[in-house]
Each structure stands twice: as C-alpha cells, then as structure tokens.
Image (cartoon, rainbow, N blue to C red):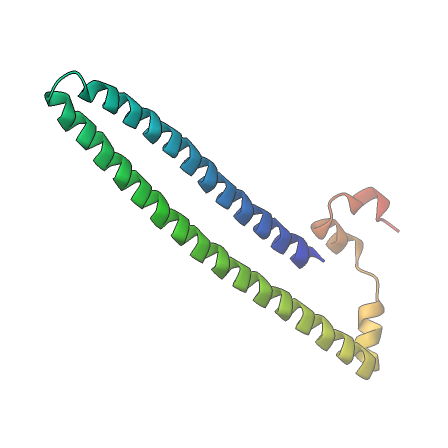
Length: 135
C-alpha cells in the first residue's frame, strides 16, 4: 500500500511537472507574441528598426525551438517514468503473490507473519501510533 502511495505521488509529481512546462510555454508564447507586435510597430518608423524586429523574431523562433525540444524531452521522460511505475507496480504485485504463496505453503512463514509488530518498531514506521498503538 505504501509503495502504491509513493507511486501515486510520483505520478502526481510528473503531471505537475508537465503542467508547469505547459504553463511556462503559454507565458513564453504570450511574451513572444507581445514582443513581436511591438517589433512590428517599430518597423514602420525607421529602417533601423527592421533589424530589431528581425532579432526579436529570431529570438522568438529560438525560444519556440527550445520549448518544443523541452516538450519532447518532457514527453519522453514522462513515458519513461510511466514505464518505471508500471514495472514497480508489477514487481509489487509479483512480490505480494510470492509472499501469499509462501505463506500458504509454509506454516512457519504463516505463523511468523501473524505475529504482532513490536511497539517500538511500530512507532518507527508510524509515529502517530505511539500512544494508541501501545497494547
């Protein structure tokens, strides 16, 4: 159960990362559009301003290229993370199945797993179980 919570946390973290990249892309595109509009207005005034507009456009194109490359990289990393999560889930399922089979097949293992967890060890993994867990 704890492994699933960790995996869920990783998925949520990955989705938050993708959302942050999307938000960054949106803000950068809005800023680039504003810079382009401003550059177009300036090009009407003088021929020297044409150089500024060209530079802004080149910067925008470079930004768009970087953002597209970052989005592709993020998609690849998200896919890899999903594969790792799926592998971890499968390993968790396999371990649980092996433990259940071992518990069913071996009375000593079944008896050991039925023993209560000592209070000090329970406190180590669940600090809230200190007072309520002392039995």
